[in-house]
Length: 347
Figure 1 (cartoon, one colour):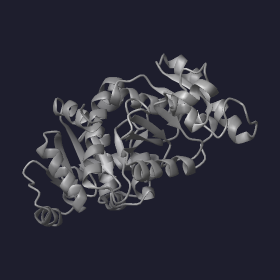
Figure 2 (figure 1 turned 30 degrees about the vertical axis):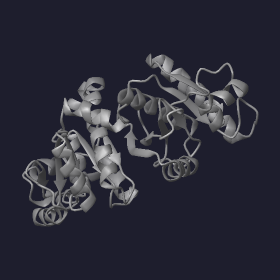
Figure 3 (figure 1 turned 90 degrees about the vertical axis):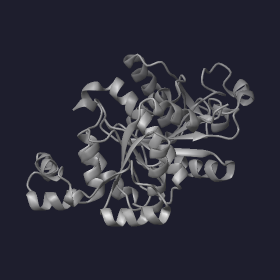
């Protein structure tokens, strides 16, 4: 049986994509870009000063023949990007000189590249802090219709294939919203369910997690998860989305069939959830790190939810294996985005 990521590679080879990496001089990024090109997954684009990128590539023994290198400050696209930036409300009164300075920063330039279809997807975060990676993406890339808050999800490929969908399971939100509201939790669930369907083809079975099962506790934190479950169901039904949603439930109830038969025997999700929605950023991020390091899961993400272009915010210190995996997955998502949101992606 092919590993999940190998299936992603095979699918992307049929429709190669352009992926931009703002941290073009990071050694792990350069190595991942070299492998991305060598595997025939598309064209990686590294941002940075050409001589610096070439020096890193030489040291890493990476052939740059099929890899793009763009220095934002010297790019011919700069003159087109400046007036586009100045049209945005946040940047309207700053003037061309300051706009140029902002766009000379690779993370801002990369956001403009993906927004205006010079590339298909963006992968950032190998060396930058989350605050510096997320800000330009949220400010410069159009949101999807009806989305007011950006969030994130991760895809995990577990060594134990009894859980999730043959070992594949999604966690959300592990990176962006510290204390999500009921409305935000419902949006996180719907958008993560969509990503699950897009990447795996499987029907999303979404579990809203808590320490409580089905009203066993009446404290506000539990009631919030129950309310979010109901709201997510309403939105999925209204949008005609084929996904099962249930909660609140304990984590083991969500993924262990034997316990689900005892604790939630009438649930269509319990015991076979492939999407887990956590009550807050603390619990989600902690769970993700523990599963990665204690259970040896392959973790891909964070995939940013609610943007009209595929963007991934990596964990700092990501390996070239991890960067390659998320770049390929983001490329695969770009195919789906064009099918689902043709007007947005074409814009």
